[in-house]
Figure 1 (tube, each protein chain N blue to C red):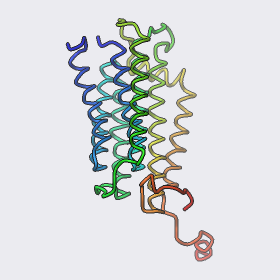
Figure 2: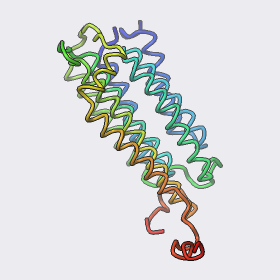
Figure 3: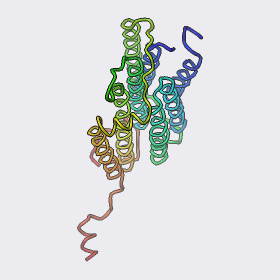
Figure 4: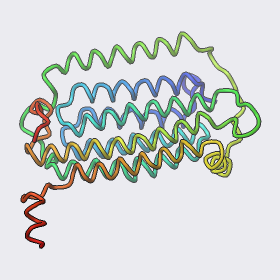
Length: 107
Length: 177
């Protein structure tokens, strides 16, 4: 069985790549992609800890980590919808998605 | 077995990380979105490998089925598909890369220092039925809150992205009368 630390290191790698994308790329959509990658890395951590932690018996006792990951996926979907909607609205006003040119929010 | 890791885990993690790296370095935004899809699929495979079937298939449905399509639509709607002539990276790219590398080093150090070498825990017996029962009993309040959040977020996204009408609304109402 693959040890827990292997999953955590893969999640850390994905998180670092997402952070690098969010910090270095100039396109606003790619920054959102980087944020999605970071959220996914957090989800992988949640699922890995859920798998490798002891589970109390009884009424839905062994489901907490899994539920956390599922709700996190739902919240990430909402975040992606709002973020991309904002980028499209900004592009309609200023015809750019370049972050260095995005200096004002007023239309 | 390489470094004590299974071949399946090595392949899926390599796929995941390669997709993420491709999303970071490719120039064409559509290629970035497609490699992001590869990363999402690799993460879904890792979830399946961890025994989380429901989370794995939710990942495929939500991320590959919805988020990746949304990203591609946003790229096409903002005409970002053409390879731009200017630089793809911000002027402070070195600082961002250094911060990301530092975060990765810190996380890896923490993981390798704080955990025992290997532990074997029996896989939790969780099936989709128990997840559904838990969602409808223990977690029904968070489920409803997430439902409201998704509804509000999607309506808000549509309102934000909707084109504003040229004429002010009052003149439209007047012409309607």
